[in-house]
Amino acid sequence: MRLEVNGVQYTNFTSAKCQIRLDSLSNSFSFNAVAPGGQALPFKATDPCSVIVDGEKVLTGNIEIVSVDYDGTDHIIAVSGRDKTADLLDSTIGNIDDLGGENLTLKALIEQVIAHVGASIAVIDEASPEPYSAAEDIAAPEPGDNAFSFIETYARKRQVLLTSNGDGNIVITTNSGIKAAGAVQHIIGAEDNNVMQSNFSYDTTGRYNAYRMASGLNPVPSNNAGDIDLAALVSQGGGVFDDEIRAGRQLVLVAEAPFSDSNCESRAKWEANIRKARGLIYSATVPLFRVGGDSGNLWAINRLYRIVDDYVGKSESMLCNSVEFSYDVDSGRNTSLGFVGKKAYTLFLEPDKYAEVASNVA
Image (cartoon, rainbow, N blue to C red; front, side, top):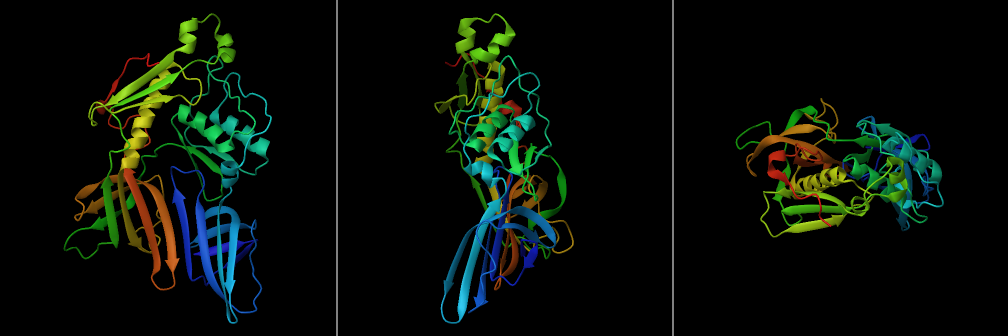
């Protein structure tokens, strides 16, 4: 693993980590080194940088924290930071015009927020969610709203994920469904196993039998729709049942933005599926950074890998939602992988398990 700062690549770190997640906008890194006493510190906070893993750039961002401990002979240097999208996570919105009109896309909305905060981030749309309706939607942030929380509200309305790529740009995406070569394997008695350690958990404490969304339509964009019933304007809603969870567990949420009945139903199903995905987790640590050792591609998020692990009783394809590349001078190169169900982050995660609830949940 290498850290490239201001165009110069640095190696010889005692340890390094880089974490990449599918369901989190900003990725992170940390590097540690021991420098001989008297050598000038080569890094400073805010320096632009990239993380290079086996010759491939996996993160572009900035150093945010630099700490130094030293004695008469050595400097112990620790640097850490996040990719460029961290600026949206940390920034708040000032006075900005309402964003609305026909054919307003999520990509255009995000680009306008990026321009408002002055960040240098591109938006790549892999999902192409449908545009927002001028009769239902108007993006009207309040001064002081968190920039990422604001745009994530509208991403949830279209049931898509916001993540980042190796260039530090935002990617609008969904579950890719792409099957990748290679497997995470621990078969008892096999000689080609690659699992060094693993963990499986199935946690239902964050799941519910009934998910209900309550909302109302925004009266300003609704003017574009002509006459509308007042009761319908203030009382929109919808939901689903998850039959895998016992009755008596209910979650009622107020929609983050004005939702119609149909949007409420989709948003409720998305909530149920996200909570199921987060409750069903398999993780494993494998040697080196590439599938198949040094011969294949780097392990990657949003790919389906075959999981065959006799110790936890799993033999199925699962979606990789986190990758952490790590190096330590003593233990070498390892990759920690996190997996969720193969249909996680979709509206169609075992749809037979869900039934609609009454549309009026107010």
